[in-house]
Image (cartoon, rainbow, N blue to C red; front, side):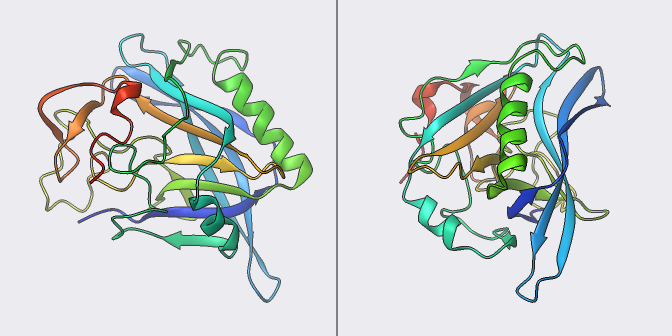
Amino acid sequence: MALTYGFLKCKIVTNPKLKSSRHGREIQYHLHSTLEVTAPDGTTEQWDSAINVGTNDSDDLLQYKLIFDFQHPMIDTLKAAASGFADLTSSDQLPALDFLRSNILEGTGDWRDSDIMDGSTHVEPVASLLRLLLKAKNEKYDVYVFGRKYTDGLGIHDVHMNQGSKKPFLNNGADDHNDHNDVWQDGAVIVDVQQPELAGYFTAFTQQMVPTDKLGNPAPGSHEIETSDDGSLAS
């Protein structure tokens, strides 16, 4: 069974802060912000966000795309959505994201390697993403955060490609606590910067392998993701 996945349409209401958490032998870094959603009756609800920006492990860097000319027909669907969480857990089509099975990354350019994280905010993509998120907060832009819901409160995380992880993180098709592999559950951040184009942030860890099978596990002959793999499994 899949974890609860979708996108949160929201406003950023606090300055993003860089936080770290240990995962085995590496430290992963995330930008955390308070996200606010407004119900039709005017009441508000606040969520946490954990947006992946990299690790301190030179063998498990983050590959990322931070683009400011994102154009895709899906944008109309996002703009028409109500503030709040759109549950896409069982979806197998856009606006659920799958970097391999859709054309969402078409024309977005090459993947770039993150710097090795050292806890500072001047490394990339931290510095550039911070500027974008701070501008979104100050200008009250609509922000769309794709990922999985926290299981212990209001929050969204796994904001990166969520397939292609190797052992011990394989999806056996029956474990509803698996938080690594699945299809049509990739994470991203899209910001409506009040231009015809939007800004988009897409990431994948270098140890995640593609192509993937129907469970999101690495398929035979898999390799690290490359720009030529974007949308390569689209039917």
